[in-house]
Length: 149
Image 1 (cartoon, one colour):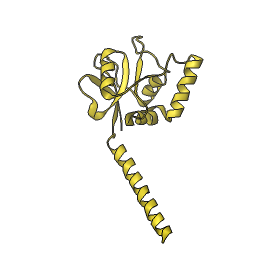
Image 2 (cartoon, helix red, strand yellow):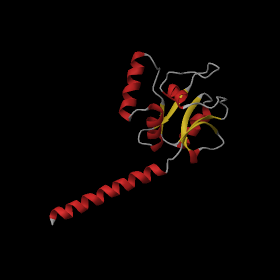
Image 3 (cartoon, rainbow, N blue to C red):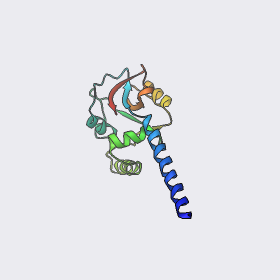
Image 4 (cartoon, helix red, strand yellow):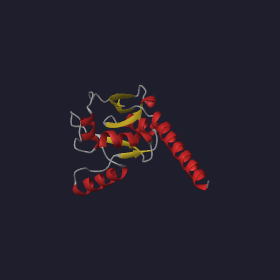
């Protein structure tokens, strides 16, 4: 009898966890790679975005230095970017930029921001910046270069 009760409790806990994961992921069906409206960069491929975000491409066509902006760890949008663009876990991302900065491949890791509002404010302040937002946070202050679904 005790085993049956324990089994039922474990099954319910597992189902609740699966439901929570599905609910959390459902609201983030699209994350858009964005630049300020004043940046005239054209549409980018996922590979172009990856090269920019990992520091392999550090300037726009006109020679202006690209500033990469990221949301802080724990943000669902960041998880999408790490998975779809970087193809890394959070710990792999940290290790990559520590090693890249140490060896001189990059000057610094991307800047971490705490919210979509802060992301839009930083994008507005720097015409050479690139970042990302959930589709519902995109407005006329930014231009979408790539949609990640």
